[in-house]
Every structure is written in C-alpha cells, then in structure tokens.
Image (tube, rainbow, N blue to C red; front, side, top):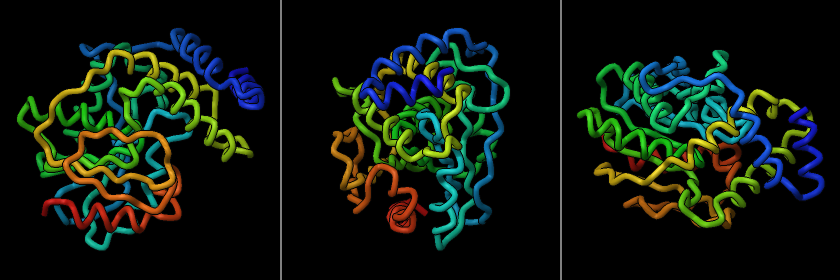
Length: 257
C-alpha cells in the first residue's frame, strides 16, 4: 500500500526513493489531454464585492488543497469573492493531466469560470506559486491577464535540489499527519503525476506585478521573479495557519484596487 510505503520510507530517511516509486505508479492513472480538458469546478472560499477577485492556487503536494486558504481568506478586512482552484486529478474524476500544457489548459478554463470577466489576482501557495505564474503567462497571451500574482513561500522551481526540497516538504506533511487524514493513496498518485509533468515546465516571462511572501524560517531558496518581496515571521506551513492574518494583511496592502 502506497501510504504504508511512504511511512516506512520516511522512517528510513528515504522519501526521495519513495517519490520515485510514486511517480512511476502514477502512470497507471487515467489521463486527459489539452484537447479534452477536465475542469474541476473552483471552490468558493469567501464572498465579497471588492475587486480584484482572488483565485487561490494550491500546491500539488499531497494533503494540499483549497482548505488551506480558508483561514487566510477569512482574515481580509476588505472581502473579495475568493475561489480556490482544484487541481485536476485531486478531484473525484480520477483523471490527471497527461502533460503540463493539459494541466494549464484546464486550470485556465477554471479561472475564467471563477472570474466571469472581472479583474482578478492569482495567489499561489508553495509550488502553486509556480503554477500561478505559468497560468498568468497563458492568460496574458489571451488578453485575460491577472492584475497581480502573489506567491506564498514559493521555493525556487529551477533549483538543482528541487527534488530534495519537495522531499523535505513531504516529510513535514507526514510528520503533521499522525492521524492519517491528509495523505491518501489517491492523493499520492495525483502528486506523482504532477511531479512527472512538471519536468515539462519552463519559466515564461510575465508582465504582471508580482509579490513574493517569503517565510522567514524556510531555508530553501525562493524563486526570484517577484518585483516585490515581503518576509513573514513564519515557516512554510504556519504562513497559512497561525500567521494567516499577517499574510492576508500583506496581500491586502499590496493588491491593486
């Protein structure tokens, strides 16, 4: 069983080996292509009339998802309509994107559904910041660019030690999931699929104002593409938990209105 294998690998300090096995096992999942995008409906996180609307982009680390943004969304004093994307494959359809382009095609459609032509900003957490940046590039090319991108503690995706950084993050989730509520075999396989297709990712130039919120206690290098950087006295996980209010205030103060 994948979850048992993961726990044993973590105990042996061999999560890197486990990730390789999860990547390979994910090849058995059903897939969709860019010509046939599967678009999970974005989840409404908060209501409000302020603009821009907020589109939260989660990480593809197992255990991640729209729920991580609830505390932060509730901390905004000026409420915007905020929705969180569901990464295809982490929903109930079971299909994962066959390619990185297929993933972006599906997510771009989800953004259009959630924004309905209104101004919006993309807010990506962890590797979700990289997804948000890639989405902004795709949407910008179609004339639907966001007014801003916020990256919340997005570790450098091009770094030579990217695999080690991801294994560290996964180990942290394992440590936090003592009751087994976050990690599932299905989630592990979906994560493995995204790890594979992320190898196709290449950075694009984006002409959109970008803010990086850097967790002070995270040792891994951050992606240096933002034109504004703020440091939060938090770690990679508490930045959306105990320190969610601080994170929300920094975003709120930066967003173009």
